[in-house]
Length: 212
Image (cartoon, rainbow, N blue to C red; front, side, top):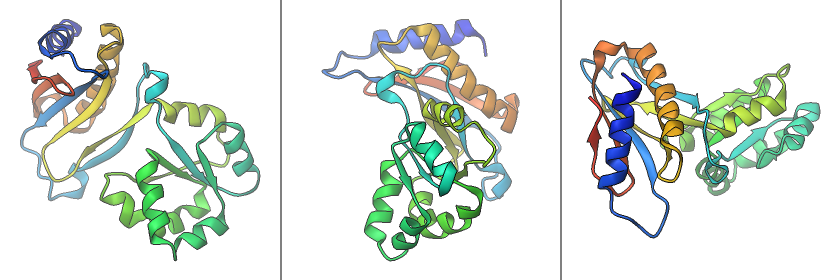
């Protein structure tokens, strides 16, 4: 899919959308063909790093960790750090567990806590299309967190299509296109170009404009 095709569609979507009293998001919609979603390997829930994300759109992140890793996560500026003890308490506090699953875009956990995070938060994360992700012990925590700050989660689960955020109407069109290309590359790698049936862009309250 060419840069020119994407640019035309984004500019047309911005032109055709009515002005609102808030900054509208620009969304990418991809419809797939001939994908059997009854087969787990054909579903997808994965984070995608976007090169251009405004400060007010950065992802909210919490970390489940102990010791030095917890300290590094705090120093990296994550929104919340929870200990093993916090996680044990969440087993009996479903209301708080549900709130955590709703509040944070990404839930990261050190490797040995992943099974417990999955058991405690899994039921609440799954219905929101989220999954817990591993925070490796040997990684540069600050760089790792900064990358997830500028990431989104894309999902293909029970319908052969996905819709995701790729920018805002006040961003330079070139930035929005680079974000869209990053998402499309992940989709093409997973399903192949031949299985991408239609691609649209739209503003939050605007009409869908077909890219191809």
